Image (cartoon, rainbow, N blue to C red; front, top):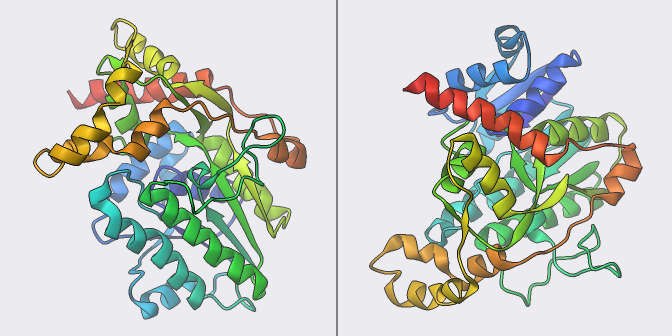
Length: 336
């Protein structure tokens, strides 16, 4: 039996489907409030037999604050894909981020018996990377620098990684993946749907980030586990792309003009207004110094290690965005 936490999320659901296609038995965790119908409907984007595969999943409610709940979910499990996490860059979400990310990871690992669970994959993020190699790129050796400013999300992921490495030293076979910004279909109120919605407002940032298709992440994750590649971490990104490039693709789909760049001169003022007026205008809290520096930066991140390890070719980001953006646009038409 394989356990997937966070299986209703943009990635967990696709990892579950990937494993089911291989004939594996999958147990998937969810919250009591999770919308399983939405997950089921999203499978039509990835397979011709969405109902068939969805019905093979054994769903179980989990409470990461309840050890008994975690132990129940782990019964008979030999492999774990830990995808459950909260993603937010809002300072107001600090407590939730630590609770749902680092603390939940710690409790899950505490409940795991390495003699029964043979394999453990943790989904981290490129947000934990700091420092550059001789080519001016971030790679798997770009270790988190505690002296630098980071978002709470990045810190919570870094702390989670530390728990995973501790468990590795104590005998659990673990592997960590660090995906870029994942593009996928379904879960439209979050993830890619939220990204596409925000990028359709006509304005965008001058920086760039590394993107990756959810199908690539799911495929690589399952292959790493199948090949028992442990004690390492792998950056999973397809390309480093400007925000404007993606925004223009979104806007073109909806028949709008290309995005306008928000000038650095304006962005540089936002942290000041965030500090002064953030208490009265909650939205301004997002414009803190850490977040603004992130959307201005042009960090280059290399995927060389995973490409060479698995001889893997990523889906080009233009193709990825085109595929998922069409699904998003079709879902909007269907809902209207």
